[in-house]
Image (tube, rainbow, N blue to C red):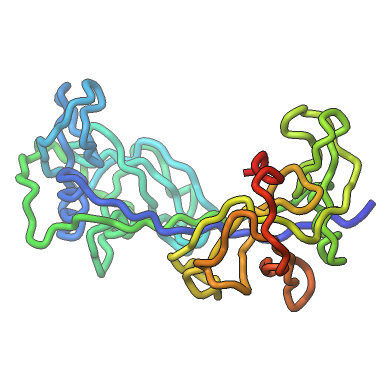
Length: 315
């Protein structure tokens, strides 16, 4: 049995969004060490506040201030914190119903171990030293010996100086990718400067990269077919935003390329030609990376453009 291929893979992007009046007030309040909730139509105080009533779905704006201490309603111990989590040492994820609130807020609890955590325990907010108007302005919760508060939540106008109007939340997923038998054969062939696809025994179409099964017929594909190496640009886009950790100057062209003999277009970058001269039907060939493991990009072959009828079904 051949060695199973694996590789670490990271998917990461910043998610930027604007804030409505309720979320703006909530996050700005955290910056000012004030926790705001909102009163729903059934009288419950919802924390974190929502912009729409959870019962009627109508817009709600009745902001109230709640306490900075509360009660743990449920919890789970996290023995191995991951990158970007609130604490670098083991901690508990807790749902905390703050004094004056009727719903619970999820955050981290700094505790010496799982034996120190229990449902019903009292905790309070530990504020971050530097606050910017984000949920991370709550550094974490910490155990608190004070009794449960009985004060009613106080109405709040939600007005602050220099309110927060937008946030950028980084999203990141780290995992180990295993390509499977079909794509492992494909990757090993690329190391030999060959591109292989697999033919469906039913519809006879050749798919690249191979998937191990025909996406149309649903039957296994185990017949390998060498393709290309040349192909035709079927469609493309011009990229004007530089990706993080990608050493390619913008603008550049990313295209779908139908390799000769394939019935499915693969995607790759087009180089060796000004971005505004790339066109549908352009004939291209692979340019291999310095280590020769895969094509770094495709470049024009100098051949006449392919006739539209020859690739229209692959667009």
